[in-house]
Image 1 (tube, rainbow, N blue to C red):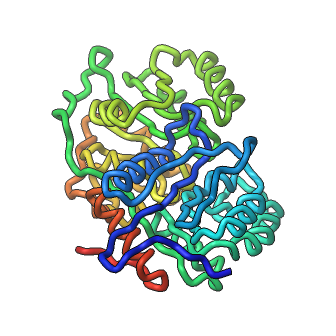
Image 2: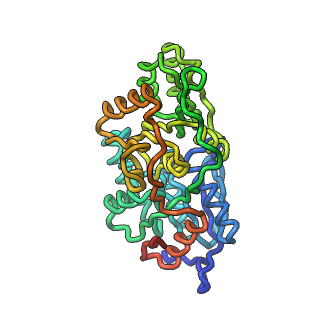
Image 3: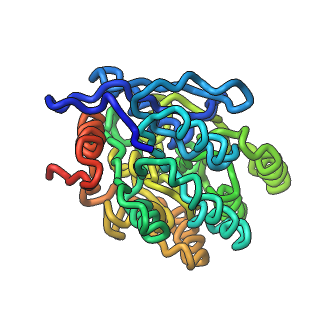
Length: 359
């Protein structure tokens, strides 16, 4: 089917773009925060809007135009249902990919094979894919070489702190502040952090966890039960999902941002920490290796070497005086959401061309 679209005009303007996502229901993950920021920029520039749709209800009206379908639907709902709606609606439709199941180490191989077989069909209903991670973009191209239009749509990460650095840790009166940002789930690895900190219970630290607790309630219950068993309740705080400003405030109060996630598309939390000069311990996931080199203030560990990751965390907690901000600023791909929407507009104007960076 030939899709007609009101995007874009000869002047370079884009209008009538619909970003479609599942209801957030209090979840403020990196993907939802990306969508909210992109939607604000689209609305401010007269390019489009965001709509939440629950597939349990009737399909939204689907006039001609352009739609970006969020990849969160791939986890929760039958994509063939959405593909049929896109095809019937006559839209120029794209997938906004925060996630590629074929790269998920927690999925069994037979589940990946089944997903791939179904994906080959429903992807034919799309005009293209916008990926929120550069390395994820390369993975989509590798798995689906027949798809011509797969673009990297970079998130915008402001590169400035808003508060002074916290005072150095000084025993129990001013403990080492650790923070982890990300939905509480097995793939994010909070259990790995907890197991390591349990061996350090005599050290002076506080661990703040920021992220939705609703996606994996059994996992969260297990974490809390383990915390009680390990007598760590006074050292660990669950904050749930926080608005962007409050999340940034906790990041800037921390001496060290700790991530045990092995699966990221971009890695918003890691990028936000580095952009605010917060020291980071993380696995080499998402686009992190593209932004900063491993060195003082940025300990980036091979995901196949969890013992090295645990050893580094133990050393930093035992020797907090060795923690310093990164020496060099991160090489992030976009500094403003206007720049991100420029990438999007360029790709929609020239669907066969991958947008290039300005710098």
